[in-house]
Amino acid sequence: MDPRIEKIHGAADYVKETMAGRKPEIGIVLGSGLGKLAEQIENPLVIPYKEIPGFPVSTAIGHKGNFIVGTLGGKTVIAMQGRIHFYEGYGMEMVVLPIRVMMSVGIRTLFVSNAAGGVSFHLHIGDLMIIKDHINLLPNPLIGPNMEDLGPRFPDMTRPYDPSLIKLAKKIADEQGVTLKEGVYVGDTGPSYETPAEYKYYRLIGGDAVGMSTVPEVIAARHAGVPVFGISVITNEAHDDYAEDYVNDGQDVVAAANAAAGRMTSLIRKMIENL
Image (cartoon, rainbow, N blue to C red; front, top):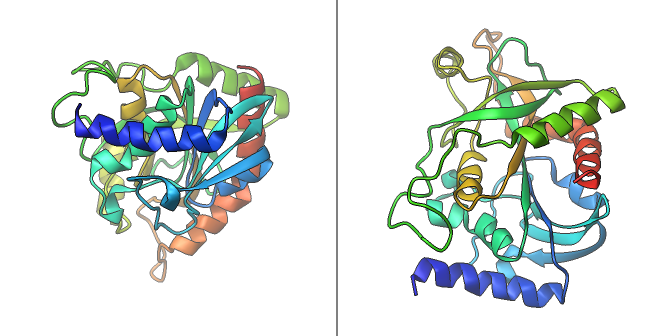
């Protein structure tokens, strides 16, 4: 057997055994400062990444490094309380391993969230942006021999973010009186924040927000045919017109994400109820 498949199965078998019969339908990835949604999960079972065989450990600010299994919106969910980033030094196989493990334990839909810089002028701190498409500036996680058990060699990416889930999000947001923006997410490697010239470049090539995650996870999910809903919390305005003393700060990003987490949590909970 392909050793990559063995690693997925080994980790998934441990998670299944630890869940003791729970069968998650929904997978959720919680980005920087957005781990609070995990606190809304009822009857939570915490599975630390460090206890899962062959699993990477999250080292990023605001990422606790746990799977949380429980009930949200009347469905059994498995949430990543902290993700794995390429900039932490892990190869792409490890970055997307948690996604593949969640798919292996049975999720049928994936929600991904992140903290992102708004490069479009219509985005401001605290905005929630539905990700309608992305631009990938990270290594593709499907490079290398294809794992035929998971999906095709050349998966279609015409609709990486599921149109029906986007439509549902807009409907619920209207009912809740929540304003949602919509845009294209640019995924780059980090960990340095982008320069003003890079922010301008991302805007010119069609990006609306930029971050250091998410895209590899979405590619891995779509490779296996799992529908995805993505949302960004805009935590800084990357408008390349800063004051002379302005600096990007990781703690500020987490604080801004925390401030918007309640609205995002309410939206995702209601979407899950309606699936």
